[in-house]
Image 1 (cartoon, rainbow, N blue to C red):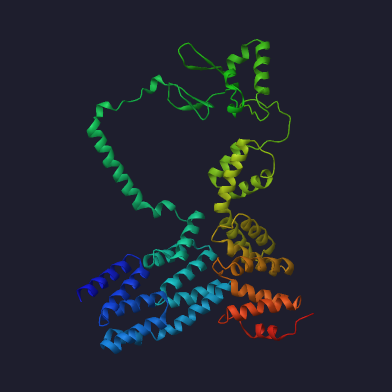
Image 2: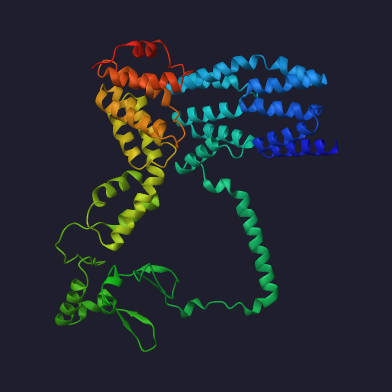
Length: 481
C-alpha cells in the first residue's frame, strides 16, 4: 500500500512539473500494484482527459466507480458527457483552419477552452490560428499553456522555436534562469580565485602607454581619449592577400610603436615616392579596395562586404535575399564567399517566416500575385523551417485563386509528395484538403489522376470530412484509356 501511494505522489509531482506522459506511466504502475487505488485511477483519467482521449478517460473512471464505488469518478463521468460535443467542435475547428477560416475556428476553440478537456490540442490549434493572423503574443500565451502541461510537446516546442526565429519573442527570455545560475556560479568561482591568489596579483593595464589598432588597423586609438577614432589612412583591405602591402602604410619606429603615415604627410612627399606607393597598392591584389581613395581597378563591379555585413547585423532579409540572388552563382574570392555563406545561413533561419507573413498579408488583401511572389521566396530557404509546409500550401492555394491551375496542381502535388508519400515524415497539417483539391482539380483534366488522389483520401483518411460524396462520385467514374 505504501509503495502504490508513493507512486501516486510521484505521478502528481511529474504532472505538476509538466511531464504528463511520464505521470500517466507512473499512474499505471501504481494501479497495477493495487486496483483499489482510487486516487491513481482518477488521476490517470484526468490526464487522459486533458490529452483529449475522452473515451479512455471515461473508461478508467467507470472502472473506478464500479470496482471501488468511487463517487468522484461518478461525478467525472457525469460532467464529461458535454465534452463529447466539445470534441466535435474541436474537429470542426481543425476543418475551418484547413479552409483558412481562422476567425470562425478561433470562436469554436475558445468555447472549447471553457473546460480542461483536450487542453493540449486546443491550445496548439489556437496557436496555429494566432500565428496565421500575425497575433504572436496571443500565440505565445497558448504555447506556454501547453508547455506547462507537457514540456516535451513537439508541436508547442516547434511553435516556440518559430516565434523566436521570427524575432517575436526573445530567446534569452526562455533561458533567464540558466543565465542567473551561470552568473552565480561565475561569481563564486571569481571569489575563490580572488581569495586564493590575492587581489594584489591582478595587474591593471596602463592605458596611457598603449596605442592599439582595431578593426584590422582601419582605426587608431589615440592616447588623449583612449577611443578608436577614424583616421584618414590608405588602409588596404584583405591585407593577408597583399604580400605585405601594409608595410607601405605604416613604418616601424625605433621604439617599436606603429607610426601612421597620415594623408597630410604623404601629400608633401616628392612625386616619385607617391607614384611608388600608389603602384604598390594597385598591384597588391586584384581584389584590393583602398579606403579614402578611389580604386584604380576598372574591372567588373565588386560585392560590398561591408554592406552585406550591415544587412546581416540588421537582419535585413529583403536586402540579403537580393545580394544572395545576385552574387551566389558568381565567382567570388574567399572573403566574399564567406559573407555570402553567412547571409544564406541567416536566410535559411529567418526568410521562410518573413516571406510567409508577407505572403499571408497579401493573400488576406486578395493581392494573390504578391502573395505568390512572397510564398515562392519563402520555400526557397524554408525547407527545414516549421512554416515550410504552410508556405507551400498557401502557394498552391494562391495560384488556384489566380486561376493558374497548372502551377496550383504542381505545388499541391509537391506538398503531397513531401508530407504524405514520404512515410518517414509526419503527415502535414493540410494533407487531407490537399488530396481533396487534387482530386477535384484533376476531375475534368485527367480522370485517372483524379481517381488516384480520391482513392488515397478514401482509404488512408477514411474518417476525413473531405472523404465526402464528391470523392465517392469520382471513384465511381470510369477511367480513361
